[in-house]
Image 1 (spheres, rainbow, N blue to C red):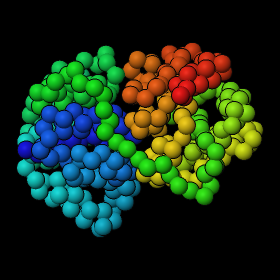
Image 2 (cartoon, rainbow, N blue to C red):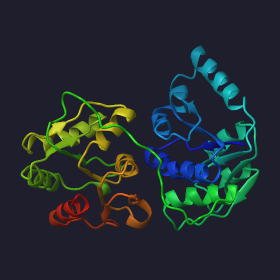
Image 3 (cartoon, one colour):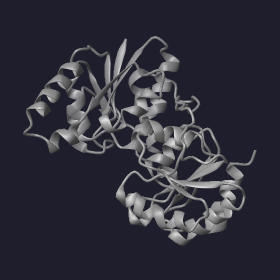
Image 4 (cartoon, rainbow, N blue to C red):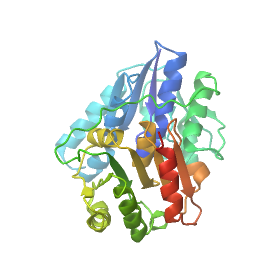
Length: 318
């Protein structure tokens, strides 16, 4: 048997799809699993040993270079690759119109959420089989439940992301233990006040830790730089790819961040995580993991400094 998983983006949603791979492999050790994913996040499936083949799709880049002959060649080659294998099932874990149309291009019965459960109701029209999956659970669990319904998997199984990463080795990393701060957020409502990050960093630095702030974009660097400047010996990391970022997270004492894909990736890697939620609902947007974690505040409330510090010390206690 061979199945195709369609989950192209975003980073947090891609991380939430990883336990599906573990669930399937646990019940079907010999089943081959392919994954169609945006090229930006293709390094994530590489971390899971049960993924056999990764099919990167470059939709965003193709749209930006639509009149380039090389774009049309890439699109043609991708479609050929997608259709080169007959699948026993094509699982669209994303549930958008885009992902449903992508799943339909593969050779095999397409399976997805019914109209009431999909992110886009129109997506359900393009599946050969639809399944009623409640929306009132964490997105990670929704993906697991969909796979369980399609492949008749048991529901009561341990959460297992199935990934590992070797700690990053870099000359700019400190010799002493480091803690990662992730202060950026997709929405301003999820930001934690800058002064709180600074005071938290100073408190943790006084305990013998170096604070490291990843900054992939100009906006993230603008957010991270004044925080790092106010914390002794803090480091703003250079831009890193997903694979190197996973190594940076894997080597940290722990991670404190807003509701971003990187906090979910850190939890998937088994690191202690404290997530500071703003407008997001902790029950549906917080991290889930086997390692200690805390999802603080949310739904418009703001966690205070002592709550975050105490939660982190609890999560990282030996």
